[in-house]
Image 1: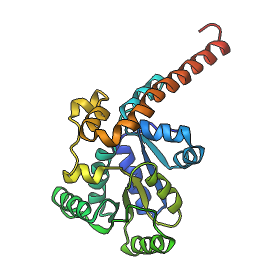
Image 2: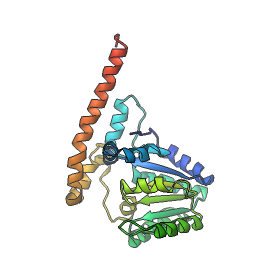
Image 3: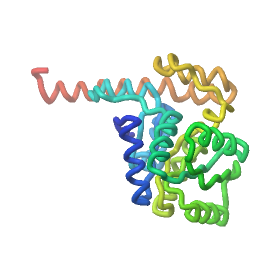
Image 4: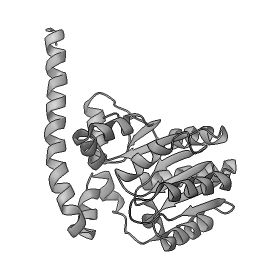
Length: 249
């Protein structure tokens, strides 16, 4: 699965540039869960690899990029990317939309944005039902988003649902779509974020597991050990290939 080395400032400026052009783009924010979902599902892998940018949200992905020789790779967390993008949108006067969550969480998140970024323009809030939506409902939401004039939409309906939604709506929406997972609830205070030291140490998954063990333990037990194993195989394979092609190494 493709992962791009980027930074908050670089990515935010790219998003603003696309937004000013009313360009239909989507950005995936990748972690171990997304990598393993793409490993298991070729169709989903095509969705992620078809994104305009794939950022390394999870610290293990940053370590992986560095091990593969990308020394300047840095973490671009979804929750922090939201803030960097909103700040850039505030300065550029770009209108925003929100898609996902509950009506209450969207209201709280909008209040947070308006308090933290005075003058920010959130022009559309859509809380779709927690079930597959009908074509009629989808067309209604598309019409609302287009009519709002938003040029950036934060999509928070979870992986892999949000990535599939963004890919299916490319060219239907004249805006940049960013899949940001639980960022609405993080910034509205509904879900606690891991302390910075745990984020830097790559232990954010452990903090989230402690907050929601019933929902997350199966995901981590299934994906984390396999990610380590398959990445080591990939790394060893690359080193072996290099050694065979250049015996002097």
